[in-house]
Length: 484
Image 1: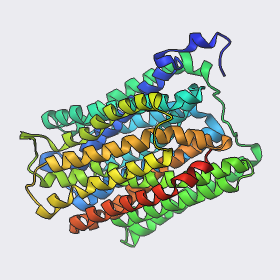
Image 2 (image 1 turned 90 degrees about the vertical axis):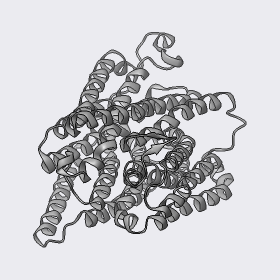
Image 3 (image 1 turned 180 degrees about the vertical axis):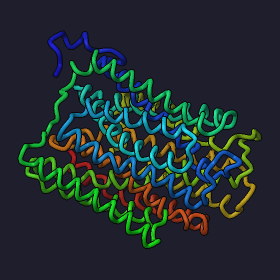
Image 4 (image 1 turned 120 degrees about the vertical axis):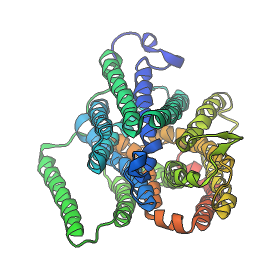
């Protein structure tokens, strides 16, 4: 709750709440650790033991990297539920941060595949707790709706500054000292982020936000929830054991299961929210209008997150030269956040000055999604060349999808927060992140197809977003009326 002191005295950076920089610092650290680790994760998996890697097949490397991203964003559903029903957003961020820190520490230890699996499990659980709830906290400290777009844009800049700096630093450490020293950099930065949040929470946030769960679980529900969790654990564990014993387990089959699970979770949560008695009719109408926004997210993240998996593999086929300079493969991962940082900052100014003169929300989404499709059109020519092509094509592709992301992702955080029913605030934010899970799950399932039919893969991934953008343009007027 807001403390008794005058509201003006609680304002800080850009006239926003003093607790806002604490949230920025926390998210910066989490994204630094996530993208720094992910920039070299694929290469750690597929490089030979002599190169310091695990030596797994390329198809498995692409699939595992994509699965990691898909499961991270799928676990945000759990994080959102824990926040809404038990802990509240502010407390679950601390718990998630501890899990993330532990995951990066484990990965920095040279214990091979076992440390990789344990680390990924910890990171998936921790990020699922932290990620949706940090975004929810931004909406909680920004009380003036007209400042929401600005606040979320600044927040998005913090995300991408961390995402931009980390690949360069982690890649340099990996080249000079090896993978495990590079992974330890992610652990150090996440530790600093957790310390920043703990300090800022005690000093500012606990006075500025409601720290309780908005829809706390009742005593009557506790038994049912416990048995549901036990049942799910037994089901997953039993299925895994059976697949191993029958020799049917494979990374590809796991990818298909995760993709189907992400789609089913999406259908379940939309159905659950739309049928809930806690959601009013006007809120339900807004949730229906939100579905195309969710689908836009799926298209965006399938291509954008492919930069760290699909395109990360594709760049190994290039000549590694950008405008005549030889670059490390992992350095390519800095292109997207570099463009997004400056593009988002510019759009924050545009939103503030020209708010009433811009295309409507859904028209902006359509433009962004069209750019996402165009980015993969640019890779068709080098895909047909197969080997030794210029990395300029890849840099240009990543820059174009970044411009599409600028029009979609930062504003989606604010839109999700604004359209969320009161009883499902954190879970709606988790649904937005679930769009990322669906997109990356599809990438994991199609990793083998990509390696065998690279040109056709890029062609399909270009065509689908462009066609969706056309449909969104036609429906923009009706959708705008639904969220009014």
